[in-house]
Each structure stands twice: as C-alpha cells, then as structure tokens.
Length: 221
Image (cartoon, rainbow, N blue to C red; front, side, top):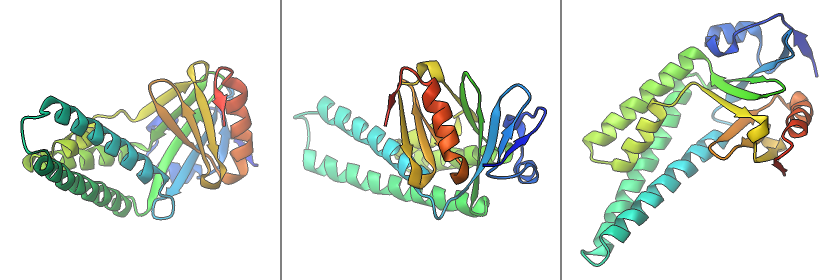
C-alpha cells in the first residue's frame, strides 16, 4: 500500500476535476494524522449502492403501505388497493433504475466518493459538482412523481434532493462494523445511519484494522 504525504487539503470541497488531479484510489496522509482517499466507483460494474438505495426505498414504501392498510382496514376493496400499490411500486422501481442510469451517463460511469478518516471517526462526501447534480436529478424525480401522484417516489426523490453532501460516523458511537471484502466495502453503522465506506483494494486491510480497532463498542462481522 502506497501512502502519499500531503500537508493539508479540504477534501469536502474538491471538484471532480480536482479529484482526478489529486489522484484516485490512493491513500493520503495529512500532517494532523488524517487519512484521505478518493474512491472511483464504476457504476455499471459495482451495483452495491444501487442495491442499498433499492432496499431503503422498498422498505419505506412497504411501511407506508402497511400503515395505510391498517388505517383503512375493513373500509374498502383491499385487493383493488393492493393492485394500485403494486402498480405504484413498479413505477418507483422504474424511476430508481432510470435515475441510476441517468447518473451513470452524466458522471460518465465514474462515481467519486471521498473519505476522511482520523482517530475520532470517518467522513464521507461526494465531489461538489457530482453532489449538486445528484440533488438536481433527485429533485426532478420528486417533481415528476408528484405530478403523477406517486407518493413513494416523491418521498424517495425529496429525501435525496435535500440530503447533505457530508456524512460522519463517530467511532465512539458505532454499533456495528461489517466487511465485504469482495466489494471493497466496509459498513460502519451507528444507531441513526449506515455509512458505506469504499476502500481501494490494496488498502482494505489497513482501513479495516484502523476502523475496527477504534470502534470499541461495535459488533464486528
């Protein structure tokens, strides 16, 4: 593993062009002991993020359907209502697939993930231009679903449109850490969020040991 020493850099403000210039899939060490890296995900080859988004949206939609069915129990044609729910879900799936395809095309197949890791925790962000484009696509998706009275699609699109560009997991609050070596992925989970940490393959063991040794309260798997 090659670690490149740098004095200091604001990783959260990098554009995609600046990220390419700095270097992809390399580990950088700042003077204060912070480790940084930029992971370039090939979206057509690595579908782990798509699967995660699909599971979250599906879970939210299923919860909404269950709540509605409980509220209207005994007051209508359940089979007809289930058919409508199934049709709406099919539309949501198509929106997710289209959005993923569109982001892949706009980003030219490369999704840039930026990570900063120190003794306190780990932070994830996107390059500034890709983050802005992702929010614009999500907002457009929400507007289209609103016009079509698709509540689930509106919820999913709005949530992504207003999401922050930076997520932080404090090691002292991490409840579980799960590794997926074949996907270059480490899940760092707190009570409120599931943080996906993508790591260059030759640095995976180093980052895994760094995280697990500091997440003293976490279940490791």
